[in-house]
Image (cartoon, rainbow, N blue to C red):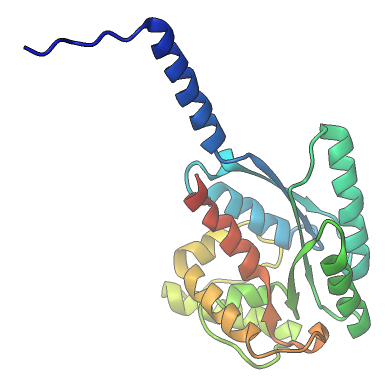
Length: 233
């Protein structure tokens, strides 16, 4: 019978410490996200609901904070910078990634373009989930592909039509600041289709005159990134 080799307890403990240290080094670094929204209710409501629906374990990896500022275009970029500094001072922590969500709306083209350019050149960079013309375009892309400019008064009609058709109902009425839109889209829409449609729209434009990219949205980049966290647990 072969002799059993005894390993000194000190060696076993040393190996255990090394294994524990290796496991700690391989553990994903906890990061902090700040999402600053132009709208005070529509966009924050959507992302707050999305936050609750992220896959299990995601919130252990990323902290997501939503701040509805009510600011517009260029001013929201500058407000976001102030908020980042304030969070660092108040919570003694660094914002790892700052996202700003805003619309083209009826603001001057130069204002919209300047906001995106200022964010892109900021150090550290500010990421923009902008939409031209309104955030509701992201909702519509959960059901159909749209490549023609849509006026603001048409969004409500098209959303109601799409939801009623998908749900088999006739009485759905869209309310702009509804806290239930994420759940409605999750139930009757298709997020993967929305991301696919958004990417297709984005390919239609190659210049940096973002105000002319209508319809177009970058919300899919932020949403896709949030959901990709489940692969980094």
